[in-house]
Image: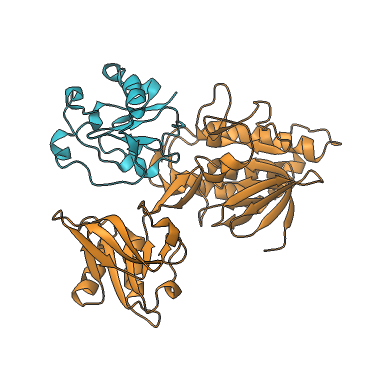
Length: 345
Length: 109
């Protein structure tokens, strides 16, 4: 368990709205920490549509998801948010001193006075192989998280997937001091979504006997003496066969899952957090929800609406954090204070 | 509101949509996928995934597909229509059917 981080503000989610929340808090003189399940910022913009066009950002007639994220990163840079990537918030609890204790699955705890949930459609987590009986071996013989060689050194490894990560994992595992005893790539058909280079490297490794490819759809498991022994496959010829293994690494990509948000004890409507439209606070003092995760009468799931919500939420936070100060509306064009905060004074 | 699978999906079932759904709201029938309106959160993530553009926000449904809102809701309640959360191979004849219209008569419940 890491030492708890005490901070005024924590943002959950580093998508476009979470990043803009950082900016608006920065303008208010509030430094914040940011947690995101992905190893990089950008959320859906980075993960689902990095190359696809966006036409409705005010003042930017056209940009891609990737470009929007880059521009937002530039915009928040003066405020130096502390990023905690590759971890997911699992619990939120109110402390006796009214602060919130926010814990991640990597054992990091934050003690915060204001919390901004910008979790979009949920955390992007590795997709798991849906097969009855497989869950029990998660973490011992079956892994969906980031691949690491010590899991399979000297073992019979099966890697499931058809994209870059799956093929690269096979190639990595087939050589070096921590090589697996055998490497089998498993995908439902002999057709891959990886780059042409990786596909050709994989085929070479197969013909050189360093690994093999098996086409099939997993349909069942064989368990003996409490160990996962084999996967049952339905092969393209429509026959059943057994694929023996010690370790199964699934590389099936990422998908968003709403996950623990629903267990944080906040009021929800159709799985979205209910907020007011004055400052986008939930009914829990100090907890705000912005972007796709929230709902209110007239809600539209647009990035630009999220920007508006984040702006008013930041004003809401100042009112809570500095009740003695009058919250002044200042303009970035003219305010010396804002220029100082932006580092351009 | 909800999102709705239109007739384009019938006889195809490409299933790309189910991979991205954050709330696992797709249900699978013999030759069609439906969205359970009680589970859908209108995140729209599935729309661009469908190779035949079968999915619409309820309010964007074309005039000739209005009946699909109720049909999606009804099918989602059928006991045989189970949750599908992982992509699988499309139906064998998907390529032949994907551009056809007026496929409602083919729907198997």
